[in-house]
Amino acid sequence: MRFFHILFVALACTFVLSAQAQPHSDKAHALSKKSKKSTVPHKKIAHHKHTTRVAYELPSMGKLSGLQNASDHLNLKSSVALVVDQDTHEVLFSKNDSVILPIASITKLMTAVVTTEANLPMNDVITLTNEDITHASSSRLRAGTSMTRQELLHLALMSSENRAAYALGRSYPGGVEEFVRLMNTKAQELGMTNTHYVEPTGLSSDNRSTAQDLAKLVAYASHNSTISEFSTSHGYQLAVGKRMMQYVNTDRLTSNPNWDIDVQKTGFINAAGHCLVMQTKIAGRKLVMVLLDSVGKYSRIGDAERVRAWVESLPANTPHT
Image (cartoon, rainbow, N blue to C red; front, side, top):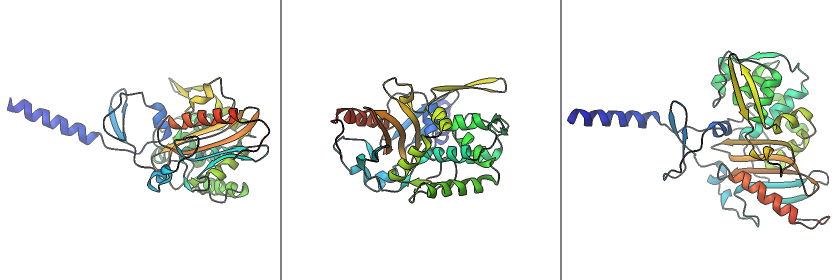
């Protein structure tokens, strides 16, 4: 009996050591399967085919700075929110919209802008390298996988594919350093004065912006037909060697018939919380919506629904605050 007791303790210790907390991205959330609720606060358990990984969501920068204590009349779960009429520039709703925060994979919208405006051949074949793997986690793509620039862009926008986004920057003439320089230059051109990028995926918490700046980016990106198409497509099937890989949109609203979305992007890292930006038509108005640092995985969707219901309830052709 003593032998079996020692064996049990050894196995238990091995399990605990293998279940280390890791920061995870919005892409990791999209790939995770639903699991039963845990009694441990802030604990997410993701069940994969071969392993069980326990991950802890650390407090976001917004929570640490007290932003999540701010209340609003819509009872949003997002610390930061901004809703702007794109045609009239009227601000319908705002909450902490000038605070500079990490923006996670919302970064990929600027990655897409720089990529599409470079006029590089979209059918160029790009092979993923160990550099792409090292700098971008949470991905099913492996080093040695070859894809066209168009395929990389599609996956980066639709399913927040981190290695695809990094490969777009790494393969740019001049490499990642030049690509990031152009990201920041474009931000300045758009009047995004409180925005700074350090890499093209959003995994770094040093990629930062404000809701006011991101509203400008979303409005600008909505005029780009490629970004609009790729960011709102429901799913994409990709042949990788002998495998067929199925990808889905990280934004469930794109497949909801009640929504008319022209451009969107989700984002998540621990420091940024759960984020969502979009340009959508509500009650006949073309609106830009920015939701940052939402406290739960699905709260940003709930907040978007609350905002939409509120806009639809507003009297037509009257100013709102």
